[in-house]
Image (cartoon, each protein chain N blue to C red):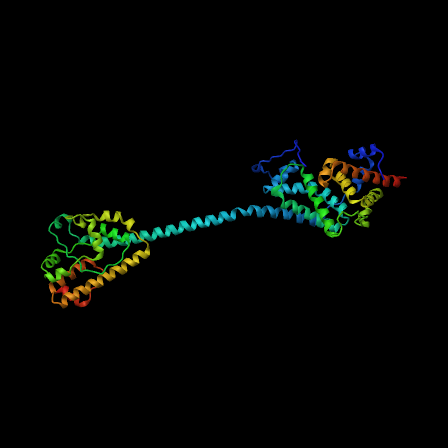
Length: 201
Length: 252
């Protein structure tokens, strides 16, 4: 699948590496290229842009903080190792979340070696009481409902919510056809809307 | 469960429905600060390692270049010192040389006694060709001319001088070549230190053999020839210390 984004800046002059302070307004792709050429400050900007959405994607995917912390860190390390081969053929965020998807799926397969399919995710117990205290009742119930979704539906829903990916990008990240991705989203949204509706009535 | 209402789904895709707002309200989790620090530290270390890759080969290359240059400079210095040492020897011999055009036509140099062939490097032979041994004084020459036939038959040029002779055309003596020319050519004669050591050893062998020949002349009663040879020897090896009996012979 070709990841082509004509409107994005593709080529960055390696000699034009600016300090990190100047990188705040730069595109993700140029920041990644700067980092690949040795600008650690560019990575820092990139990291702070994506750390929250990526962390929540992993956390929703695996269901507990300890595992999420480990996988989240490993995803960034893989990105660091792959920096020299990075080519801005697609949005950086698409690339990053593809790395994350692969890592989370790999985690599932390793933790359950006998299963050939990604198992349906039961409700994780990642939400601790003290974490829920500061949140609204509605948000807490929604999180619990999200955790009950099958992994594929949950993943598609979180990718849309956290990074605003469209159907085509979700399909690209998860390696399925756009119709499949859209179907997963429809089921997820319908189920979660039911939960919210039940709560309000 | 099959969704039937398209409009709520499209509204969610646009991000302006209640479900999207409810999710955003609760989605506040962040990675722990320690994880942030670890990731950023790893990122910085990876870049530092990458940057540190190229100076290392450069440093090795610079070390090699400097080492070779230093070795070359040391060798050059040794060669210059050796050439200067040889030049100093030549300068010591120079005042004892008679002027070329006053002595050459009639001069008949006393040749050293035959010596065993000593292997010498091409540089040394070339140097000697340009910078030959000084001629014997006039007194020694006359004595040599009066030497008996037996002594004359024993007198032949040593191997080293054989190498010198062909470079000088007949009728033209090697002292005609100015000393400065010999010194000008000396850089080519500047051999490594090992060659200089070998040269010194060869010279000592030559001198010892020559003295032995002189003693044989004395033993066979050819005193005049022995004295002539001794004087020639003295001219050739002024730095050598003569044995006491031979010193006495010279004084007589």
